[in-house]
Image (tube, rainbow, N blue to C red; front, side, top):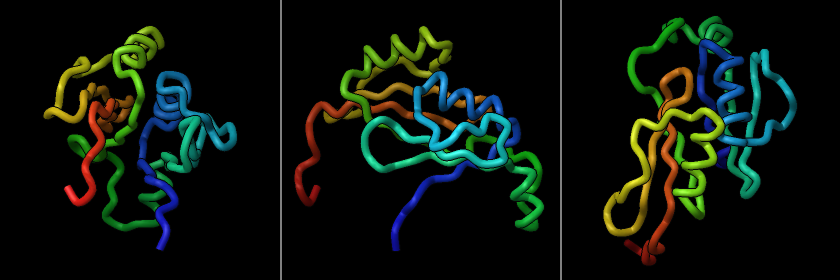
Length: 133
């Protein structure tokens, strides 16, 4: 089994697409601002976030519904310098719900939400996790 992507089901596809492309700076595999599907990746690694028009999936999956309630996903992105990324994303229009701060003694985190309410956690690792811990 191989994990290929995490896919977020979204209602306002263009707004969420622009958030991940323009605000977070992820690179689209192909331009698809109007949807119904897109895959975006950071500059490093093989991980990807995919966006899928929720209405299209509701036609395929019974009971999905047109609009979910509350937070539905938490996207976690590791960065080398949280303060620098926070400043850069704020300049691009990001509205953080929690400014950079500690989470335990191994990392610092900051939180923001995409236009659909999916949470994004930015984390800076201060100390690597020990093997087996």
